[in-house]
Image 1 (tube, rainbow over the protein chains, first blue to last red):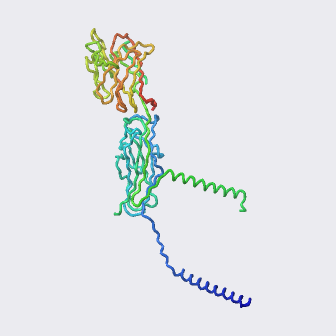
Image 2: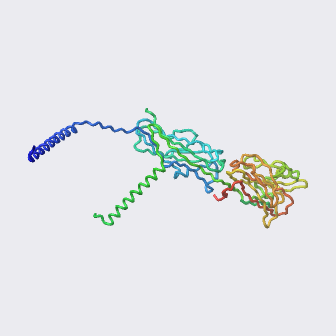
Image 3: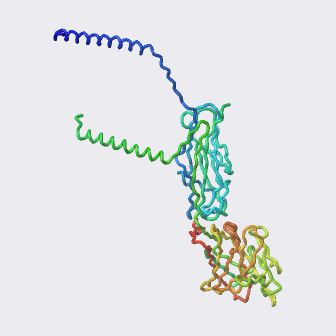
Length: 183
Length: 257
């Protein structure tokens, strides 16, 4: 049978022993952290990206501008504003990349009338006007990665010959960016 | 559009302000969030390892429009034997009109006193039938013959709707005798000839009724007069040109531009 003093001494002893063990463990832990080697990997994916501020192209002609004094006549797109579509391309890898544009024939809502694709004109960064032809056309090329987003400005115009029936015609345009695997 | 035809013959502890400022900052931040989300909703981004594509769609809206314009307000046939006139006059050996075709319904096409015209080098005309009067020669006809004079002017007619035509209405002009025999034809650019129709006082003829949209934007209106015993002085007729389509159009006067 232990006296109360013996029990107090015994308890103090256990506390000291636990404390000593913790000190040893803490020291061991400090030693282990200092000696560990961590492998840090930073993986940036290889991408090509394209972005446009709007996905709508429109040519709205009313009696104030149509018909013109002479045919054929060209009309800039009324949407996007100013008829110019800023296309941003980002590429972070080596290799030649292209920007391509495909404009099919314009089809009326009834599906009967068409405006041929070659009556849609475009120009890139203020260059010469070119005609769409219904197929995918390379309109811009550049080698290497872009420094951030690279802006390419595409202007659209519609040429009317006077033989187009009145109505609303659907326009589709596909803008693609593609990078070749390497030189 | 109206034109006149005239023939002339001789004769801290945050203060209240501080709290408000923070509050405004919060509102501003929320507002920027909203704007950013709207912007991203309008645009589109596509990303791939070697290829990315975005699809643009839209529409071209062509309203229904008819438009008409004429290059001459007044067309004058000067029959005083003046030199330098660009009219073409002939003396025909017959005074009666030849009927070219008379469909069951519609127009009657004629050859004024057996004459007709052909567009040789647009817009120049060549009159066929009869003997052409020399420059300065007076238009004097004898019994059984007739003097027929031709002139033309350009007309621009545009329609992008189906079923259109130009109606020409004749009306009288106060203070002038009416022209007795007046004929009219319309020739699209690129065509060589067209049949003439006689247009009576207060009468109406239609031209271009068989033309599809956009096929005849530039045309010549050819007018002919056959002298028919008018007195000396000026004889006149007013012609009103109206383009009509089967669809309700936005009518635009070409002269307004």
